[in-house]
Structures are given as structure tokens and as C-alpha cells.
Amino acid sequence: MSVRQFRNPEFVDQVMRVIERTGVPAHRLKLELTETLLATGIEVTIAKMGILKAAGVTLSIDDFGMGYSALSYLKRLPLDQLKIDRSFVKDMLTDPNDAAIARTIIGLARSLDLSVMAEGVETEDQRELLSGFGCDAYQGHLFCRALPIDELEVFMSDRTTVDR
Image (cartoon, rainbow, N blue to C red; front, side, top):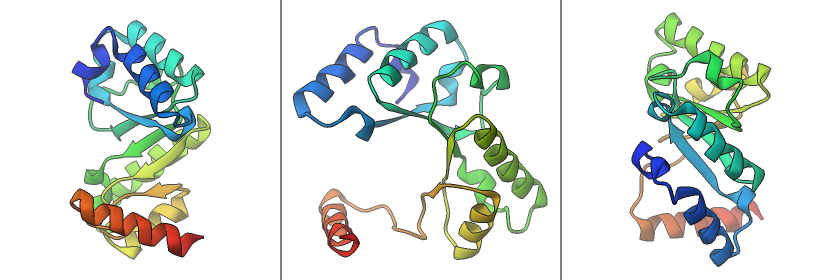
């Protein structure tokens, strides 16, 4: 969600109406919020997030570590997940600082009882290192490149058939 979308006074009501109209269980919806959302209006942000979380919506901070994440906010935000930005994943096999940052984000998330997703995972070596650090989930070309919607639907259909 962009800051502009989230700041819309009708945003929470719109999300709740979509959940009600579609019948999709709220816990199946994950909203990824950008760190820039934390730059201003934190009390309103926390209140809106609290309403969504109470309804069962999963909340994630996208690109964690790249922007405005003050650690003092993390303990107040009703989050479920932190997403490690791809810029830390990209060079973590060759740059010990990036590896240390990824490991620290995972440790921080664990201590706050949050799950962790790493973005931009392109190699099995990256996935293995992140797994060793305790990462829960991964996104990236290792698993699937970006696809047009028609190809994505076929890919997902094939995955559902295989995973049954």
C-alpha cells in the first residue's frame, strides 16, 4: 500500500467492504506497507493498522531497513512480518555487511515474534544462507520470474495441482 492509499480517510472502510463483498477470510489478505508510512502521522497509522489487525488482516513492512523504520515504532506497530529489502540480499554472499544486516533483521523480527520474508532471492546459495539465519519465506527469481497475469494463473494452477 502506498502512503497516499493508506492515508485516505476511507481506506480502512474500503478494505473491510472488499473483505465482506468477496467473502475472502481477512487473514488471507496481507497488506504490505512501505516504511515511508512511518515518517509522519504515526498515531493515525497505528490506529488504522490496529483496526485492520483486529479484523484479521496480515500486516507487513515492505523493504525493511531502507527508510524510516525507527526501532521505537516497531514495538508499537501491530505487525505480522518484516520484509528484508532485496538490496541486502543481492550482495550478502560477497558483502559481510549485507549478510550481517539480513541476519540482524531476522533476529530482530524473531525477538518481536514476527515472521520474515526476504525479497530478491535469486540463487539457492542466498536462500540457504537466509534459511540458516532463520528466514521464513522468500520472494525472487529463484522461485518464479515476474509473469503476465495469464501466465501467472497457469503457473499458480500448476503449483496447486502439484502441491495437493
